[in-house]
Length: 128
Image 1 (cartoon, helix red, strand yellow):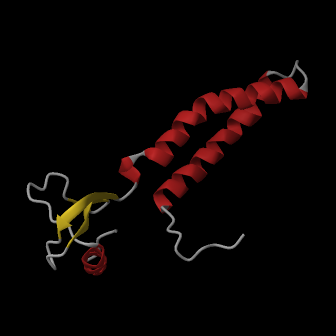
Image 2 (tube, rainbow, N blue to C red; image 1 turned 60 degrees about the horizontal axis):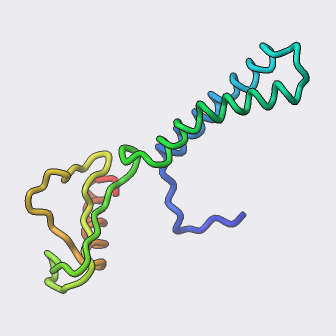
């Protein structure tokens, strides 16, 4: 498998997923031990059903939670707060160490100005 250099890994999600994966091991071990009187395939089937019932919700949280990702707002046809061009506008709303959720006067930027602002924020230590 070739990894694209443009793929950005969300390490928080990845770490939680690895922890979740390890938590599935006891399910797959304990259930067959508890069902030792049944055959192997029945015990494996029941263990996987139980694991699926439990970990569907955990996986759903890991891969959809807004608390684990950077949030952006995108609006069509705005005037860029930096260069004044009318274009699709972007603004960083929230990341782990940046929060403009309650900003009463949000500033949207065109794509180029947004990239420049993102680079400035990174230099200031903001996770973008």
